[in-house]
Length: 63
Length: 361
Image (cartoon, rainbow over all chains, first blue to last red):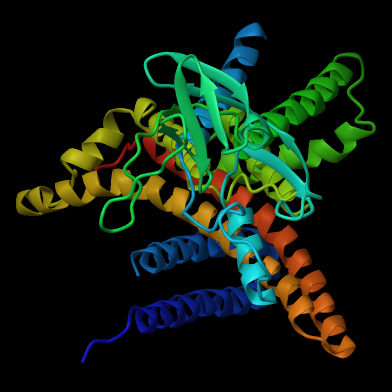
């Protein structure tokens, strides 16, 4: 049986969402522990999230 | 000063070239289908027309009903000789065929094809058009808007720069722009490139930051402009980042790509192709990220606006109106965030190119 491509798109979105969610959650915890470092944490968070997002979009286009 | 101006125009020119080279997917042309269409088909048509480039600047109204408000844009074609005419000519002629210097052209599915005098479009078995396409340098909607953004930026920063010559206290527009320029300098360029080299890259980083941001913001207006949601534009931007990275790469940068110091010899051979691949993956992901984010944002907003018309009940209309409003605010955030990320990652790549390693790890 052939799996439709749209299922793959869904899997990609789940994976990327989990990844970005974990980054966001960890960043929240880190900011709560060290509010004075929030600027640096935010920057690192955005970069990491952007990299995952890029992979996610690339995979979506492949689908 | 003059050289900087020239560099800016060269930047714009490069972008315009790549923008006109790309073209969206085929969709229904308004000439082809007459009669009543269902509301869903109409929404789909509006969406597809918005997401791709076009040869005229359509503001509102329906083309088929004859009440559309749009202004024509110049069409520049090359098929051995140069052809130049306005896109309105396509609608003036009876069969939509424009004759220029002995050649005939027809606009079909938003693309210009060479045809015979009657405007025949020939197909192969898979219903692909077999007519020849001239090389299209037209000032399309995207190119036009790109130039518009460029002129806007030139005016904004020109007037702000002039003011700083007399008085260092920011007033008016400079009060608004100074924090953003400082954000790019202190949050993006300095930490990622390093104190020694960051000044060299500031002109590009500032230009690309404000260009993407203003282009994204203009895309949120009802003008229906979609600059950064065009993959050719983001390709141009990523290409410039790629070239700047490679040309500013120092010895250590290339050593880390081709002959990674500090790892066993077998690993160096394994790492080399991966690193070389990484060179191209980085700008590729820059291109895809910006394009897909803006495209997805526009698609979602148009679809939700369409839902206002699909549902008859006033409660549902109100709910989707609120949702559109909410999503538009999110899009404003995304517009800024994407400009920030593009600039930030560009700065990271420049930083890795100019970095000098003292230790050998």
